[in-house]
Length: 408
Image 1 (cartoon, rainbow, N blue to C red):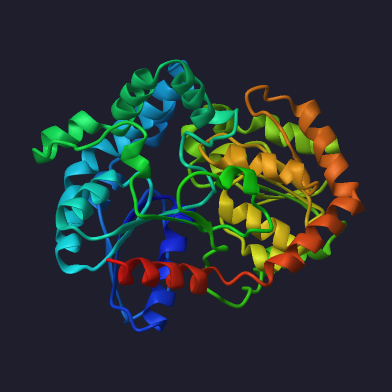
Image 2 (image 1 turned 90 degrees about the vertical axis):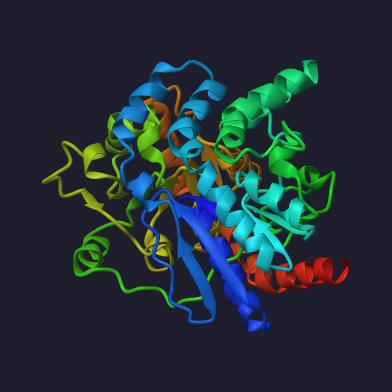
């Protein structure tokens, strides 16, 4: 059971396929906030849920409301209020249905109704998450969860109430009639096992303390790199290796990122060619510029190795893909675990991070020039990429899940 954007859904699909390889019957239910195409697999029972509500979401209106809110907790509460709360009843019903016919449930951290259903059915449950953080308690100092962690140090009840309100606990109770048995941080951490779909080569062991947290390796469906389109291939061949700008599928909610002008100005100041995997609304003014090419979608495996640097948001999947291509990165985190990955990129010496709140094109241009010209960063990324080849995320995750189920 999962919810979110492409980076939240693909690891579950990859894990489902490996479980099927091992002879298990697998059902995958997901609520996608962006377009996600999953490879067909007749062995899996897949249900895409919540489309009627999600298709009616007015992202521009949400972004304006988010921009008007002060503080990360109020901002996240605005997002979950529009996107998550209306789905809680459906999530609960689907969780109960699956729990009644399953031996074990694997869930996304935000799918807390699934934890209630697993407890009620007396079956084990596991968390699958993109970073080795126990949601709040082990969060890095910056970002949303760091803010909540700092609150928790002074007042645990305040933190619990903030999380309850953000995740719509009372709305869940009204929609389902279920009286939650726990609250606060435990809403998202309650599980018998936590799997982290990330490479141990990129993770910091200091953030893996406390609880049964296992960094198993990245979970992805193997596939051959796609051939770039004729337009992209021609652009790659036309000059120096370009910089790739990609901002993630939830970018439209964060106004400073979504407006995009400072990002494009930073690229212009850096004096580089650039591939822009960004919405058309962010690319106003670049049409007709021979040094820039905007595209809707790129295959990272075939394109990123031909880039001098990548500017990205710090999503787990993008971070892994860029390091695997031995390409330096400028990371501009703006949501959830992206702050963790931005810190790791900088700590590992394979890139640098920029604070989007300053929206400073001069700072961005300096970071771009540094990363694009730093051979040592590329070499360090290449060393990490070599270590990542030994990851067997799916096999390790299945072994841990089978061990959990056998211990019932």
